[in-house]
Image (cartoon, rainbow, N blue to C red; front, side, top):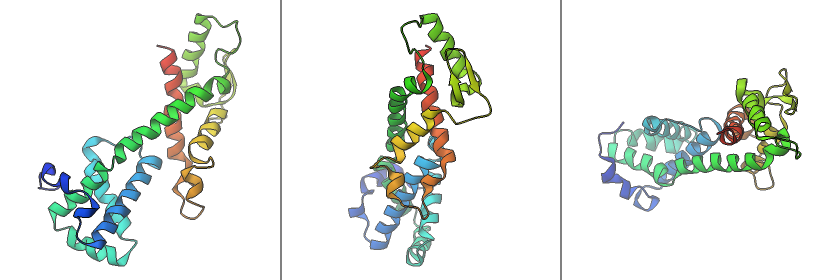
Amino acid sequence: MTSVLRSEVSKLATLSHMESPRTKHIAMSGHKALHLHVATVEGFPSSSDRDQLYWDLILESSKQDKLLWEKMKEIQGDDTLKAQLIDYAILLQTWKGTTQIRGELVTKARISIPACFGVGAGSDWTDDDLQEALKWLLDDMRFMHGGMDVRNLTCDAQAPLKNPAFRVLLEAQWWGPKGEGRRCGRKGNAYTDNLPILALITCAVSDYPSCLSV
């Protein structure tokens, strides 16, 4: 995306090395937009697209402020500064933060799922019973549905995403006492758009039976 070698500017990708206050605000605004994007819209971006994704987000976030947008017009012709802004987000470990969110969800799923699905509940489950139940859950993504009776291998196919595990994980990760969704308030709150979040939870929930069925 830029003609500047990233290694030449990565060591300068800090706010203290950005001379203009407006450039610093642009960097912080873009980082915030990127953090929100990977948490709520695209949690699994391709590594080859990260630079372009961040640049698009920083452009969009700057448009909301007239003074910042005027500064952005200058920055667009400066490959070194563009690379510096992009590296600012990467060096702040935004992408590691995304992995952390997925890891937190998987951990919470492993705690919550046995109760939500009833897998292995009771002393009369054999290894064969458990393997059959886990395979059944994964086939056709049945684990997403409500009305779950794992013992009898039945569920309500008309109730997608209605398994209690989704509500439990949604509340635990984003809407608990310290959840980001609650802190953002109601107006313009991206966390109220639950489709990408539900997709992320689906991946976390599916990880549990996948691991046990190995």
